[in-house]
Image (cartoon, rainbow, N blue to C red; front, side, top):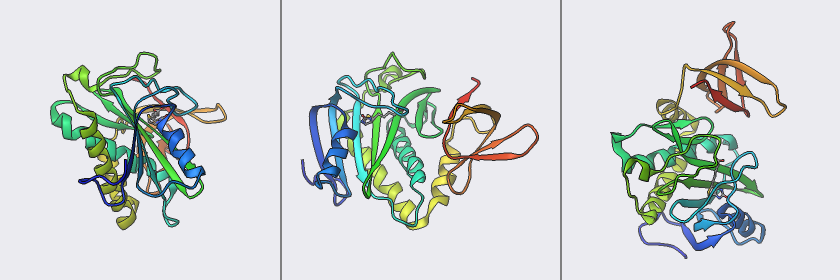
Length: 246
Ligand code: BTN
């Protein structure tokens, strides 16, 4: 625990062998007034790992479970943090895969390896803080996920967990600073260059259950998904589940 040499200034790493959920622990620390920017919670395994849309995130020992506490400055749009987090995970993983495997970011913030889900991100907010929860399948491939999962071990990569923790903290620090200094345009351009399925047909399912079909044209300057309808009109989507036809 505490500041670690080699990690960005202000990083405070809390490591556990077991937790219910690193996000839940980070939220508890925020609620009790014990959190500040740069707090990172890591666990070797989680007993109640949480995914997006109230899903369960299988969390056996061997994979990576980490939550970073940060603040979104007032002038920035909180939803853009999803892309900052995605690029951080992309870079940290790319450092190990190089170009030997196809990595891509699937909207809103999954990381795909050879088309299968390698990593998921759950962002939650409390008070003035946001918690960026990241799960990466290092050696264990979850079976019970709707999206087909993959681990780095499946492509014969053995990555040390603490190396990946350090890589993630560094890459998040890099993209967070870029966002704060330059705004969203650099993040958007980079995300678009590594995005999965731009130009492909998708179905968007909205929180109210309605669906709309169209072509995925990427994200706009604010971070909304751009869906092009058959008649050429476009719809900007802030929140939905999207399905590619592949
Ligand atoms: C998803 O559904 O794709 C998001 C999964 C996020 C899982 C990570 S693991 C670390 C952090 N703690 C949690 O309970 N969830 C996130």
